[in-house]
Image (cartoon, rainbow, N blue to C red):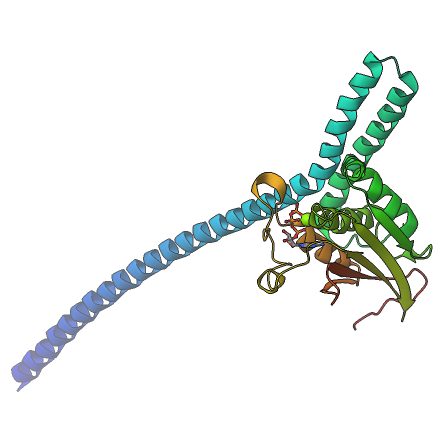
Length: 287
Ligand SMILES: Nc1ncnc2c1ncn2[C@@H]1O[C@H](COP(=O)(O)OP(=O)(O)OP(=O)(O)O)[C@@H](O)[C@H]1O
Ligand SMILES: [Mg+2]
């Protein structure tokens, strides 16, 4: 009986060892599987992170692309004015008209300063948050006409100035940029108009100043009306238009709590309505 008992014990023992060996093998196998899964996850995470890095990089590139087109757009008008002015200055110098030449050089300097202010303001526009500052409407209108000066010489324009000396809650250079864009568009639209007229009509209401820039140009057909404020939408041929003027102007106005809208007067032409907060009026804060 003793013998039988010992054999039974041995049998139990070796069974136990077998089971332990089996379990150990199982554990090892599942351990390997786990390790494999962890490796795969690490690889997936690595791939994901690399994809994210690339996306961030692509986003930055897109933003840089947009910025540089905006800069190119805003610098184009003063550059065109500079080209005309410097050409004229050379001719005045050759003729010995020193006074006119030096007056032109003074304007050239002012335009160059303006271009510096534009790049600076676009930089701050990219940063946002920098939407403080005030502007004099009358000064901005004068500056806009100075930039567009060369184009006005060839156009028998009648200008109706019908606005007050308002102080507006927007950076001076930004207001000038908006006006250059709106008045520039109006001049383009009136190229074929024998008696071109431009109305600058102001009025104030509810802490806002409303400036209406109206022309008697060719107007805007119904199909074009739908796309006016889309970036890069232009009906101008070749290099003449980038299609950014209205997009940029609307976002400059919006950044300071204003707006830009279009009207199509029944008697023809086009009117753009710029609404900007007046200085001193309480800013409409949405909390
Ligand atoms: N006063 C206007 N009269 C008629 N059409 C206009 C007027 N203003 C804008 N448009 C139309 O809206 C389009 C978009 O204007 P926007 O200023 O955004 O771009 P653009 O003038 O074509 O080019 P950019 O301003 O970039 O040089 C113009 O191409 C034109 O068809
Ligand atoms: Mg334009």
